[in-house]
Length: 534
Image 1: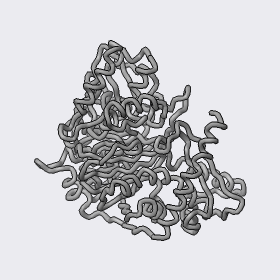
Image 2: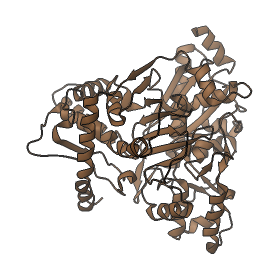
Image 3: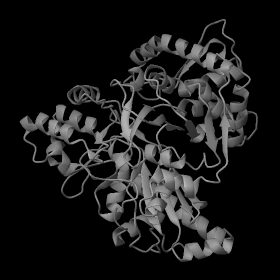
Image 4: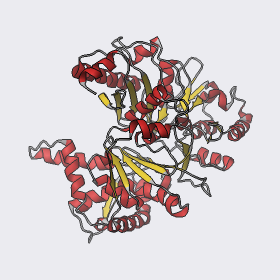
């Protein structure tokens, strides 16, 4: 579209806004009618470890939301000379799972417990056994039941149990709803009914009868909506919360709030059967849309859904690039000691490219990127760690390759269950997120980990904010009876450039060797956790 056409779209409210709360960045992306990003704004933030709990404070949430929106609106003004006063549709997304419990006055009863916490082992184990369905520690229902087991007084006062995305949506629209993909990370979903699993919900209520709480589970969970359904409109109060300048008008329709898994599927056109995507940033997860049920329940595999409610096998790992980023920051600090001010993006690119010169098995080096616990490998806490033998080939290339492998090693352990034990068939896998910004590097490492061709789109860096904008656009523009997969194929990705990389057999063999060594050395990581107290 020409600049004048974009100006008209902005004036006439034919744009779509997507805002996603990632682990370290809140990003707002405004798109035109062709789903092309035309403006953006971002706010950096960090979770806090307070009293043993990973959390974000409410004031951080609203400060970050408002800052990212203001920067996006300023970007619109700078590029097109137009004030943003109305928008065609809005969508909100955030990190899935976690625990936000509110009382009848809308007050938060206990600090927000994020997905990163691994403090619900007992609850997750009991619920998995009762439901015969894997309930991971980070799921909202695991946090709720752990609070019950802990005898926490606030549980009796709960009137609404929310995730971060649902909370923001509620405050801006007054609607207590969740997109089905987001809801599937709170409580198991029945894909046939597109709602919470009724049998499991009844079982949970029976488990709580002895506590005599004044609520049943469905009373406090958000209503489930599928992609394309309207999810309320921006209220006057909500408009003021979003745009502190007061210029944004109320009445804008919102799509169902979704989690980062759902937006990742939308942003990579991975919502159809036998498609998959890998999102790699602070955490890393793979989503594979299944054509048939798995033969067994696996603690390493979560069963969630697409934004349309189709079953998805998810391998989620708490840790991905945090340790890698920390090492790059160290190299940046080293360069500054010599008066060299390196561009951070260029520094990442140079070090990533250097890794490609390393030995296929990393030359005997080993690293664990566990900033927090990692349920896939059975860790409640983590300690970032690098180790090597005296005779290991200790070069910069091997060092960087080791940390890239480490970023995906735990994911590979989980994916091997799907690919090797369950023989799950995948036609396409798309990578997106920060790990794939340096062309060809993250892509080739993931291809080696999965022994499968990996595609990266030109929008790989746009991430979940663009993905939730696509879901909002689908609600706004879809034809009668048009499924999400068809809409994405026909309206969004038809002319999208896609780069596909085939796995190198030598890389695959090297990653397999590294993974075997990685599993053997987990005892060293366990010793570090036990010996180095927080």
